[in-house]
Length: 257
Ligand SMILES: [Zn+2]
Ligand SMILES: [Zn+2]
Image (cartoon, rainbow, N blue to C red):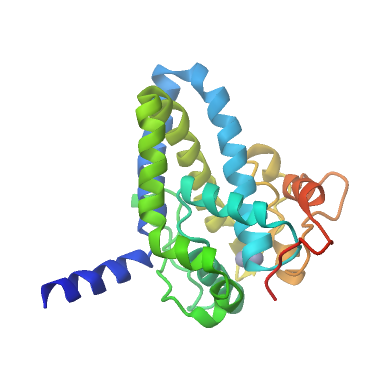
């Protein structure tokens, strides 16, 4: 039956890196367009960019993937919503990919391994990771994550339509450049965070391409359960400031274990 094939195709499509690729190419084009024609919009765009960086580092990475701290339900919903808005795909898919990266880093099974692709500028080859649910079993107990994983493309479409309807100019010259910058820095991170078969601590790049602390990557590989990536006063780890502000230890705190 045709609809079965369509459904199976859609389910396969759901779990690959399509959204990040669309975000990367479209966003970078919008970023260049904004630089040329609406540079004054980029101040607002930078605020959105920082929100995207925090969403990825604090929400998707430290909270959803590594369960490094506990926080209230509100922040779980907030990070899942913003993660989809900034086109990082569903938390479930991101967590599976990132957990696979930790498990197989610097081997041929690493999803970030591979040659630099000229078509993607500095981005390394990126392999889609099959949804090995065992790597995300904590998230599978949560109905919110199952819902977001199933409908993330639709959720993004609704949010994007609302922004576009409110102001096409904000959508093209403010929102899309922020998405582009976030995915461009993610591509740079993917390329340089591991070289010579080992993870690197490139703390100085945090001041040039702020990623809420993600450039402190070598330390993170050794201490993946820690919510703090910085070890020196001059390490710029914005993500850890956010964790400090939102973590909770009371009975309302939620963490997947
Ligand atoms: Zn790594
Ligand atoms: Zn990690």
